[in-house]
Image (cartoon, rainbow, N blue to C red; front, top):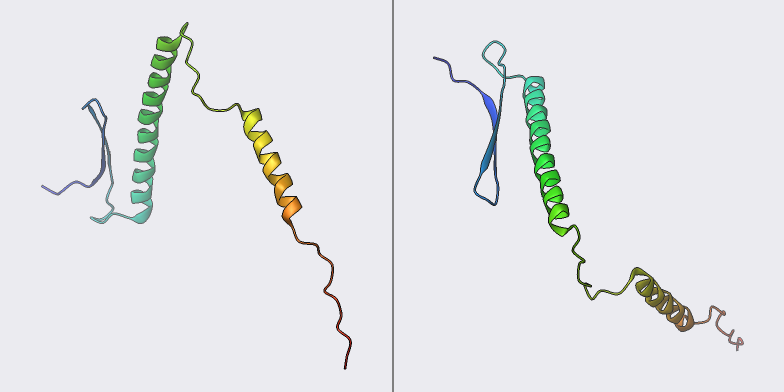
Length: 110
């Protein structure tokens, strides 16, 4: 019996569950070609992206449902407008500190 070749990926989630993805690689004349390997890797990557996207969407939906009707407490962070004002003040201070760009005085030749 010949050994089979495949790309295998296992995703371990924080809750202890696992998701296994496997894609066989079709050898030609007993050897695996680069294009076949690339195709199998791309397929596994696409399947992995689908699984992870579903997990993220499920988590977002769960959080949205648990937060609906509940007002979130203020994070204590300044509003974006306040941060922008600080940046403008810093820029003004930097402009004031720049040395003048006048050429140095010429010394008379002796």
